Length: 376
Image 1 (cartoon, helix red, strand yellow):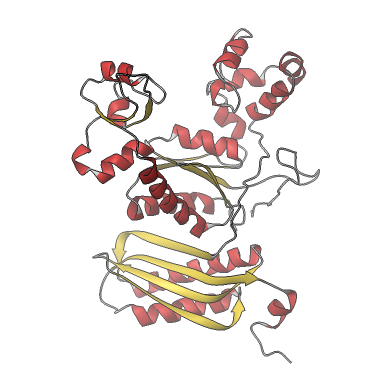
Image 2 (cartoon, helix red, strand yellow; image 1 turned 90 degrees about the vertical axis):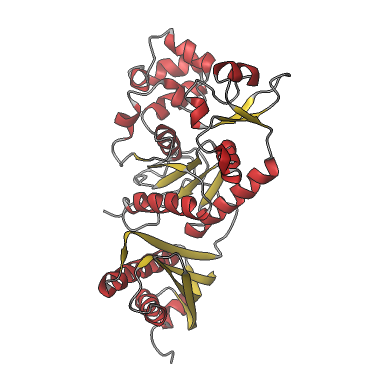
């Protein structure tokens, strides 16, 4: 069943009565980001415990630690001197924030190619609202594709969570670290949270966790057993918020500040493909998804492009301009096949295929009415 895309008019408020939220939210979090960038910049550090942070002689703290360092108990915000006592062989590097922001910019650009409904939460994480996809599970496929693209194009590992809201997507991505894609299907929100410690809920820090523990509340499942009225009486507004979150309820929207410049979809095959039927079927499917996104975003495209990447990583692309900007599925699919047949040599195996729509403009009723036929 297709999801019902419901956005509250006020952030944090419930949706209108009679409409059930069935959003598809993806959270992407780059794994050990600063340390991973340093290893990428200096491959000699691969496999070694790496700490990015302040000087151990002063009051420096750990900003990021590789998973090799974390195996010794090193974690962010720990004093660097303490981290070195746990892991004496660690390589300690001072942070290079301009470099990290450049890598972050490259990752966020990849995310914006997928959907303009993207909210960057920090230098190394972002939320994407994929509720416009025809089937909820398509968001899971998109998450896997995003993970592969970030790895291939930037060289960084990312963990992703897919759920019906931002809270659950964030918790899911944390649980999948490093390099996982964790999915919380619709209807499983409360069961997913129940065994987890209450600290996973937003706003529950060490002090609140100790206050809850005094009530014999250790897990989120324990919290669900406490009446909301009691929580509200003890903790005020925060009590009501915890009661909602414990049941997997979060209405906060993904807030984007950019408009789409293009819409694209790509598929990297598990094994290189030479079968023309399989390649054309996948391109048609990508074209359908492009058309669906344009339709739901009330946009039309003037240009369509197709990209092929061969087994040897050589890449070719072609594009064409429509006589009239369009979101018509048949036109887009036909254009994708036409361009593919111009590019593919019929011999070399294909690693990746992609379709993208460019030069987007807002649609009008008149434009959609007459496209696909001659205007009178």
